[in-house]
Length: 345
Image (tube, rainbow, N blue to C red; front, side, top):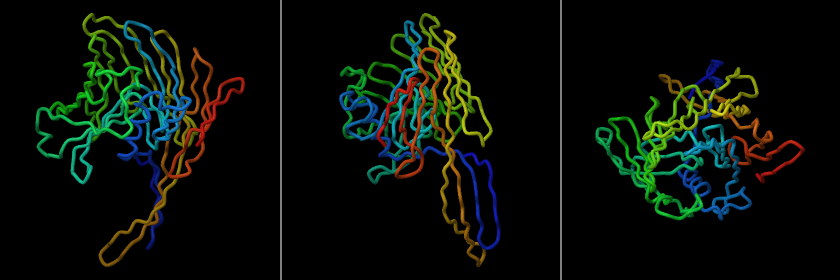
């Protein structure tokens, strides 16, 4: 968590004000419900906007498809689950998958929990019994925890290739990487980027030789600065996307993500900055004295507010405050000529 400012008013009671970027706070239940909503049968989605099983509100939009032997498509997916996506809270694009590996407790058992953020924004949960020696082994495997309501068919077909039960997840601790293989023998490779327990996608290799290769930059919003699509067998290059983050001062309301494709299209994501505060009392014991600190922490979240695309009408998004918890929920999606799609919150 990056701290931007910290102010103390000191006496017996301290008043502390701090500012921080919102850490990702998703529970195991949030993870499992996101898989049901985003990876289940299309028939479980009502009017393309609500998952009948989990109750989550959804939205999808394709920003571009670069046609070739392997099409490079950028699709955005929104879910009302209270979790940060790779382009702000609630929003994910189908590139920029990541893995979080940590020790945790599941069904009263200490385990290694492997949380994989899928291209849809769903978070798969895999586990194995906790063993400290696993960090010294060449390779260990995980088993998927299947959420209730998950069906095999989000891609429109039902086969062993799409069935998540056939996914294989391995942790190669010595090489600091995690390998995920699906039923079609496509491999995604994630490398630890220096942050504890955090792995970012390096490549996505298909069985036909097509590869998505990712270049990373720690300051980028997606932690990705470029995507290359090519065939590692023929060495033929298919498509390319550059991703840049236009930073703004902390007190400005918006910032911008800029994408430029190999066919010269420029797409811009405008991101709304939203602050909320949490107050709590911290008690410290100093010798024989008990010192109380009245603390206020201001968290910063980002929400997608506008998409400018030369191939499509501009899309704008507005939000309302959550009735429970902190943050915002998608309320309206608007286009030019006053076309409006309202999401029930």
